[in-house]
Structure formats: structure tokens, C-alpha cells
Image 1 (cartoon, rainbow, N blue to C red):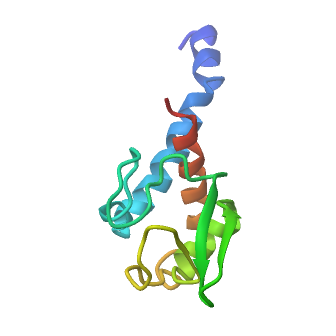
Image 2: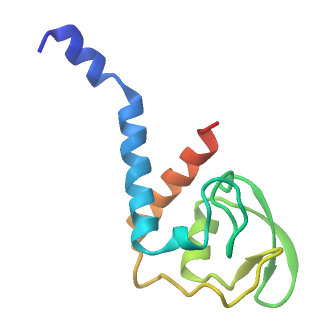
Length: 122
């Protein structure tokens, strides 16, 4: 391989982004998340993943208090491990079960990377 071709390949950042995206998406598919959460903004059983990361979410907590939270890494983890702790306005509680035993903290990081990538797509 000519050095110039190798350097072009090596310096392509999109390859890394696609790899991170596919790992997170594979985890979501493996656990059935995409059956209830869309990736294109459409409303189905659960909130869409599109534009989720970093957004402000109006939620009802376990005590019935309504508050606004930022959908950051901790929010994503909480939503996966304790889905009824904060339920997004317009959706019902007790529809999603905890995935604490199925999804590892490292997998949560990959999911977060994927969710971030959805914000970058146009």
C-alpha cells in the first residue's frame, strides 16, 4: 500500500465514529431497545433516541414530582437501570424493565457514544 493511501486511511476519523456508533446500536438492538425507541424522531412506545443526548427532558420522578433534567451520561444510565425513577412527560411508567443485569457500565458508554452520534446526523 502506498504511504499516502495508508495515511489517508489512518487519519480518517469517520471510521472511528462509525465503529462506535455500530457498537452502541448493536447493544440497543441486542436488548430490544429499538422496538420501543425510534432513532428518527418518531414517537412510539418510548421516547425517541434522536436528539436525546444533551437535551432537556421534563420528567416525573418516583415521588410524582415534575422536574426538568439534562439527558447526560448519568441520565442514560439511570433510565436503563431504573427506568421508573424519572419518566419522560407523555409516556407511561412501568412499561420498561430494568436492564441492570443485562447491560454493563461499559456498554452504557457505547450507547452514550451512539446517542451522541445521532445528534450529529442531519
